[in-house]
Amino acid sequence: MSSPARVVIVGASIGGLTVAESLRDEGFDGEITLLGDEPHLPYTRPPLSKQILAGEWQPEQAAIRTAAELDGLGIRVLTGRAATGLDVEARTLHTDDGALPFDELVIATGTRPRPHPVLAEASTLRTMDDALRLRERMETARRVAVIGSGILGSEIASAARKRDAEVLLVGRSGSLGFGGVGTLLSDELTRLHEQHGVELALRAELVGAELAGAGLAPNASGSTTLAFADGTSRAVDLVVAMIGGTPRTEWLAASTLDLADGVVCDHLGVAAPGISAVGDVAAWLDPITGRHRRVEHQSNAIEQAIAVAARLAHGGEGAQPVPLFWSEIHGTRIHAYGWFDPERPLAELPKTSDSPGTVSGSHDEAGELRGVVGWNAPPRDFRTARAAVVTTIRPLVAHS
Ligand SMILES: Cc1cc2nc3c(=O)[nH]c(=O)nc-3n(C[C@H](O)[C@H](O)[C@H](O)COP(=O)(O)OP(=O)(O)OC[C@H]3O[C@@H](n4cnc5c(N)ncnc54)[C@H](O)[C@@H]3O)c2cc1C
Image (tube, rainbow, N blue to C red; front, side):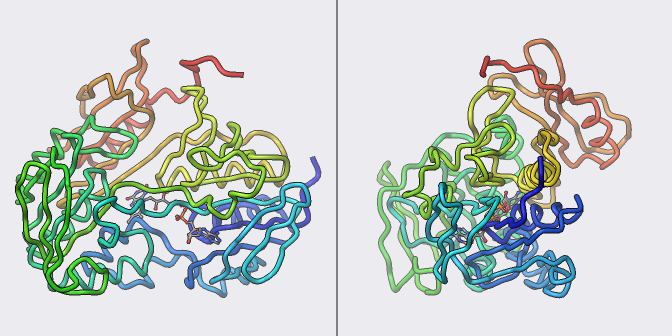
């Protein structure tokens, strides 16, 4: 395969930037254009709900590369520039500032928070600007409600407790989720929140919100009364809604690409000839299940980006990403690696050190170790467990 002359990448964040850098690492010497609609150079999102929200980091500490470094790599970065449409046949990207022709296009546009049906104006968190707004509001909020029982809901609840606010964490499903591990850690997370004074309402249906002042608006102060389906209500100073993300494919709606839950790709990230997708927006064919699925973890975006860049530069398949995810909630470090079957409980694995942390494993029906979770585990223990995970692909569902 001959390498393309012009690669255009849409989405100037970890996925898009990693494609650009990896192309250079692979020796690609053609044109690389990286465009993104945010006003910032690429930064990393995991600190937004942790160090930035807790006031421990300044925004520049989340930056990934300086303008000079990007310049040195010969990557043309266009910030504040939005893709508005795609002509697949003509290999042309349309933007809010003219058209960009390409030989290869990589889509890395991520997700946006899903608005809450009852609380469309509640604060939310995806970008650096969201994080700075939320941080400012958290400085004065004494009563915080976090709607959403996924990992980001847990992280924001933890950040609010660090500031000594009263925190109510609201979910509907009855359990707490942890990324690709699903709800297998729900009991441990419940205990952790309770030990740190978070009030949990995990089977609560929010039916309304009444504002006193402009309580819900992201920049406003004032209190909000939340009304629940069981007739109870609660007054809070700040409401943060984290109920999941929607893939940012709106700009592709008129294109011929297959868009289901994200940009549908094969197991190499190919969406159409000359067009690939990586990261949170990309629904790659999962060789384990034979289904298309999006993975919203930073390491997945990085590994998919490295694989796509290697394919564009030299052809071939590249390595299959293995999901890796980490978090820190109330000071507890949680790492997860591999695949987890929601039907099979985790089993504690033998430790190699005396530390109080634990490592648990997820085994498939053949008894093979497919995933591991480290709960405050020393890095060495987690690394040892991780190395034992079977990552060879044995499809559970046949696919062509
Ligand atoms: C608060 C927070 C905390 C997180 N913590 C963790 C963690 O601890 N561990 C972990 O593994 N993962 C974490 N994640 C998830 C991780 O950040 C994502 O998986 C990762 O950012 C995905 O990278 P991406 O490049 O695919 O998408 P994104 O980082 O979402 O970047 C997409 C970029 O494309 C831009 N864009 C969208 N549409 C257009 C358009 N039409 N034109 C131009 N640009 C466009 C967006 O503005 C954005 O800048 C966290 C996410 C958030 C929000």
